[in-house]
Image (cartoon, rainbow, N blue to C red):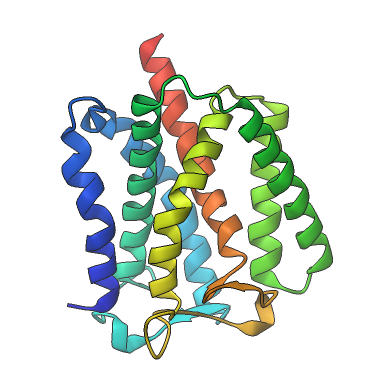
Length: 228
């Protein structure tokens, strides 16, 4: 079994088996979860496949099974199922176990920091395709949900994102070569700023936000509609 597939299995194992926890009842959200993942994941697979075809990023064959879908390694396609599932699990666990925590200020600071910095980086690095796309889209999403729509759950999302940074740094660190001679996923230096958190491109912070924010939005909207 490939290293990338082991990473996928390790990421999903805990959240899946704990989905039946009596306090969270995460399995009862499966409909909204998989609808959200399917909608957003389709967009990200298209984005991923195009950037791979342009060598903006790519994959080291020795860490893959060799099975492809949509021009991507099978493991990469599974990534867009497993990581959002795990992050939504964290989102619901935090809501269930910390129902009284105040997240409004965190949400405002988070929105300002990512919204403004995303605009700044995308304006400065117009020739860096990963920087431009990840930072500009993250900024637009944050501005749209936090400042325009002013959704009530944005503070909870910010809390989720900050907590999810811990497993994110571990998983992405493995994928980007912190523990291996070569990275599982490599990035063209022509299309990133070059700042790294260990081995992780700085842009990944914005990329993950782009993926998780609309998934949480769809999940929250569907459950609010269900409860109405």
